[in-house]
Image 1: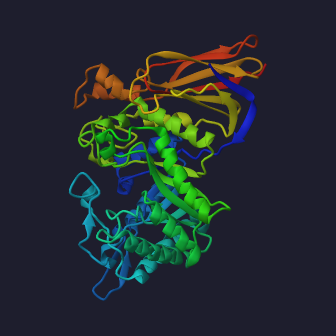
Image 2 (image 1 turned 60 degrees about the vertical axis):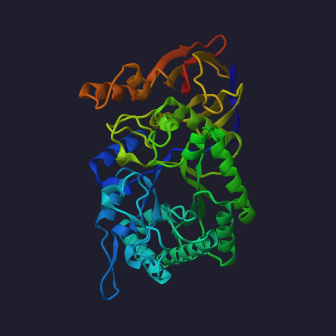
Image 3 (image 1 turned 45 degrees about the vertical axis):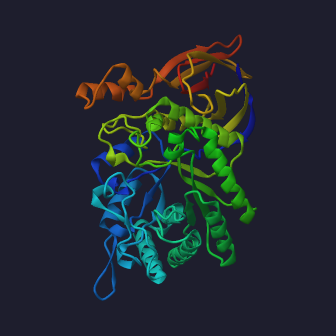
Amino acid sequence: MITVQCGKKIGDVKNFWNNIHFHPTDAIEDDWGQAILNDVAKDHVAQTVRMYAMLEDIVTMDDQGVLHYDYTLNDTRIDYMISKGFDLLLDYNFTPPCIASDPEQLRSASKNKTRYKGKMINTSKPRDFGLWQEICYQYTKHIVEKYGLERVTSWHLQCYNEPDLGGFYMRDATDEERLAGYIELYRNFALGVGRVSEKLRVGGPVLAHKTEFFDGFLKAVKEIPMKLDYISFHTYGTNPTLLNRGEKPFNARNTLEKHLVLQGIVRKYYPEGIPIFVDEWGASSHGYHNIEECPALIFREKSDYAAYMGKMVTLYIKEKAEVDKMMICLSGQHEMVVNFSGFRNLFTMDHIAKPIYNAYKMMSNLGNEVLESSGDTDEISVLATRGNGKIDVLLSRAPENFDREPKPEKVYVRLEGLAGRAKVRVYLIDRFHTNPYEKFIREGLTEPLTETDKAVLREEGTLKCAEEFVLPADGPKEIGIETDGCALALAEIEPIAE
């Protein structure tokens, strides 16, 4: 039995989880990318969206060594994002080839030979960091002039992506050389942005996972010193190599534990506190891998991922992790050739919402006050909140390592201290609710989908109220929620004014 003390607030929480990293950024100018973002905006799935500046699209140099700028594509993307009401985390990357120390040091970071639209990234450091600073200055000057200082000050600007990995920065360097190269990159980024306005918020190091790199960067920030308004890092729970070896299974605590290690390093240098952004998270890393490389990544299509998110957020709140924003990383979206192949995205190839999308939609309704609850088990975790005139009870059900499918079970929630009548609405993601992948399997459908199949699966992927009823004024206030398999459930309890 789960018990929620409806009148006992134990803390406050700001919604830190309804944010995304949208990739590839250049899909923002395309119909399929906008179809995703239109739904994300309509369903309040994301408040902040991380996107790349894609400086390689903007900057060129002529034969006389003069830099030239074409902001056409950048402005198209940002104009659209503003029209949808998104707050932006704007990543300044990658090295424009015209200032690269090695113009041939290219990478696709993709299953294909190139990135989206035939592009590549250059992973070498700038041959002249002064040129990098000038590009950061000119780009910042442009977005401030076009969108206004007040608006851009509300955004967050960051330097590069995963510079601790040779796959993204200084491929042939040692870890020590790479750290030194990023410190200089960040220093000139911050100086370039600061030349426009010191009010603008800058951050880094957009860390993948290397703790020595992280410690070294924060030490340099304090010693040089450099402006740092927030800290960003990534927290993937596992990776395909470990999954294939059976060494580190899916477990929501993996994400939290990685966060706590990095949070400990942050406290070493910022005991007074500083905003922390997890600007990429995922149950597994490697967005360009799917079931072809790792069969276990079918996880991304199932209700398991919804349960993972619920368990993860509940852990973050109950264990008081320091986090201002978390952003699931979407990638591999443009590489799908079938609908259910385990890529890291919110929608399938035919724009069918996955369970993880509906987890975001469901959890956007949680309140900002945390209520006392009890009755958690190894399989079931509960998060109770209050806000917007209602109480929300989020139930996440899955074994710790997602290594089996729980059998059908009704979970009972007792609402202590709830006076009078109340309307209850239950939303459910499990094996038989809001689960297009399971319906695809159950109905024996095949690819390519017919238009009828697409319509059926899109309807299945639409989050709907599974049950609605009224709790009477007299007698115990109790809700029974039946789930099948790994599940995420939300009960909205709204008192009825008499």
